[in-house]
Image (cartoon, rainbow over the protein chains, first blue to last red):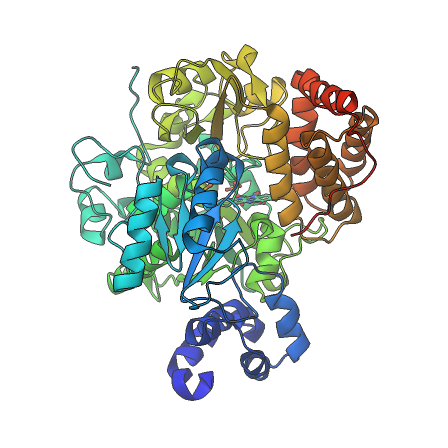
Length: 176
Length: 435
Ligand SMILES: Cc1cc2nc3c(=O)[nH]c(=O)nc-3n(C[C@H](O)[C@H](O)[C@H](O)COP(=O)(O)O)c2cc1C
Ligand code: FES
């Protein structure tokens, strides 16, 4: 349970707001970090911490696309499909990823390693096509780059191809 | 290429600059805060910002100092500042750079704002997907707290300003200021009916200012170099200062270009962003993010300032400038944006919730060569029934791609429909929509 494990962190979060309910998204994010999704037990516990009803927590969870109500794969691959990425090839990249993973958007591979989703603009429109995998951005994707990233993730759980602090265009002589 | 003095991107364009507190201080950081705290009266700071002509960089372009001035003078309870770091307007990626490359610049701007409006607490509402940005900001907040720039009794002046980072969880609408406040209160991000405005009834029903990251980042420079200096940049008197334009699409060098407001689309695209990526000519420009009406190649000489872009029938919006080359279907482009708005409609107002769904279905039908000529009337009719009939500006934004492409490229819609009619595939069946 969250409260036993993270009491200090929860108290610190609550102290930032004059109204307890404001800690809703931080606590839901914490719950998802812990279990990979927001479980019913977590929603009930958060309701009691915030002194609201479980349906009030549930109605909030269902509004936000980053919160999952069901377990997903270890790596959540989210491909931006908004216009600016589509102009530079996100559709064919998605086809490539589907073929590589053998799943469609909304599905998880049988080994539960990858879940594929399409998402709306992630503020990388100048460096498309792009995808977010868990916490990290991967930009200016090509088929070869995607293959390397997938291999890195399988082997190491992360990839050196992920983005660092963003600047575009990269200043001359620097590597962004 | 004409070169201009960058203001907000100057530090980050300096080789070796990391955005740490040490680097920021070395570049003159937090001098503006020292200059105002306890030395210039809060109302005079607001007057300075009004004089500078600074207008909001989040989308609506409201004069910043004027907005601050709406806070009730005689109210003694808590007031709040919310920094809008939700950046989710398709085509926009400037706040991400400001956050990740120079976080202290916006924090200093926030501290100055808190002082001017008398707020002791500020929240940074950052979109949930910006995990790296959130880490960088948490680190910067810790540095600023340790150095005494935020917290209790700042720089020994007796002034308290606390700042907290609050992460969103995926919802475009939470960039709308009242939806942002609802979300910050731990609820679904549904925009509130205005009035009352946040200035009197904002976060927790208290007087509140919501400002965009880029807006706030300008403040240290207005204080340091004076409002007259700021007001002389760009297209005075209505559009002062620089804008960071985020150029995307079919150009050679997409990126963030900080230039004085009032340069032309042509200059931005061909001088700064390197021109078109191939030998295909330019076909369409979106001048201010997904919510802005499309321009054609006839608009290349429109000046990129608030008034000129509005006069030409679009809006400067969030500064996201997207370029499309010849060969790009405008029906396809409008459909792609419409799918975004359909997905992101919060569902509060019927015209927007039902209208965006109906628009997407009709657009898909036309694009998949099953449209009928009446569909164009349906599109126009739906758009007219959404415009001005919603609680927030999302509804007006959602129809811009369709109304503007219908206006400039109606023949592309008609051609697709003629193909459908010739093939006998025009039908009444609506393709299913799914979120
Ligand atoms: C649908 C919608 C989405 C918006 N998204 C953002 C956003 O992501 N970031 C932002 O700064 N402003 C956004 N705005 C504008 C805000 O409502 C508000 O005007 C702005 O934060 C005020 O700050 P400013 O005056 O400094 O621009 C959005 C508005 C609407 C209607
Ligand atoms: S359109 Fe893909 S990141 Fe903006």
